[in-house]
Image (cartoon, rainbow, N blue to C red; front, side):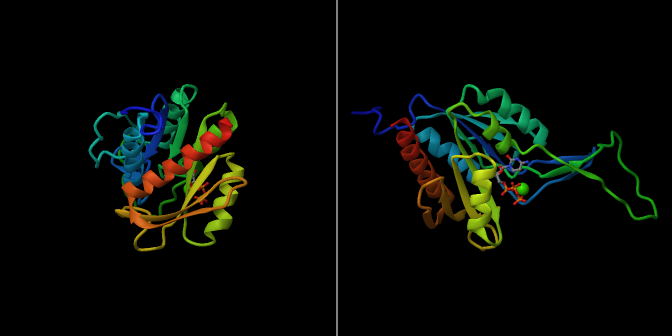
Length: 226
Ligand code: CTP
Ligand code: CA
């Protein structure tokens, strides 16, 4: 039988996924960003779609083609991403924050190109909103998945993010490994959840990692519903 709950476990579910590295403007020709390519988020969007979900992809990159059958929302800054995510959140069943959201932004954005001088230049940065933590405060049953990009002490920092942000799952990747993390086609992750043993997913394509993350999330969502 096609289209039954077993084959399409996310049928009727609304999934919102963020992807890519946000860009924080300094002036009209310069910005601060990071090494995220968006590949992990796009793989998750395709996998969620193939499991039957209605997928919204809030994307901070324009370098990857929008997968078929997915609603894209294009953003640049962490502020734009925050606005887009909060606007949709009330109506969503699962959020996956795969984006590398900038932790700081220039405190002021120049409206015209900044000219060089002979002096050193100081750029003052202010904290951005932690979108995942904000969702953790507001959640009313949404299943919240975050990532943790770490280079060391992966378990300690990942568990800290799980608790501090009130997430249901943190997918940790060691971005210091040459086959994992930013801008790679493969990844290796450990999935952390409250009161559950960590799940290790050995190195494989980001498309296959995405499937494993969603299988684990679906199982936990079923547990929660009893
Ligand atoms: N995140 C977010 N908003 C931010 C920063 C991070 O929603 N302003 C989300 C990311 O999308 C990811 C998770 O929080 O799902 C963890 O991001 P990460 O950069 O690993 O952790 P931080 O809490 O920012 O801590 P640090 O960078 O110091 O490790
Ligand atoms: Ca960060």
